[in-house]
Length: 180
Image 1 (spheres, rainbow, N blue to C red):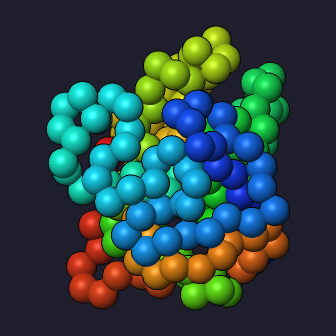
Image 2: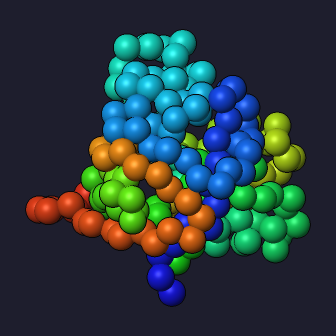
């Protein structure tokens, strides 16, 4: 199965759910044009209280549609964009990619992956029990279903549903992504 974009979303306000769009514009060093999390420095509400001058490593949030389907099959009412992602993908194990992997879209837009999204209590505020469902641990004690990955935009361009996604792995030794 090819790696493709299933949906694109944004919200100009710090809301948990993002609205579907026909396309989004990625701006290098900033993120998704018009999204509340866009900016060179931290925009995440919780992280802002700690330090507002740190680099924004959470410019773009991506979730695999396969996770959404898995949660739906367990009875959760989740849709594309409802867990706050900017880009919903299909065909790739996002959370298995190494730190620094690049996702390249046909327009030339490029996202460099910076980490795995830390599941937070907002998931339960969205839907009771959702946090526990994604924090479930596997036999190694690791989260079995992390809620997507985060990245920074390194090249500008437009991303739309049905766009292909080319994965470029980093050179050298690959290290797993950490939760951020």
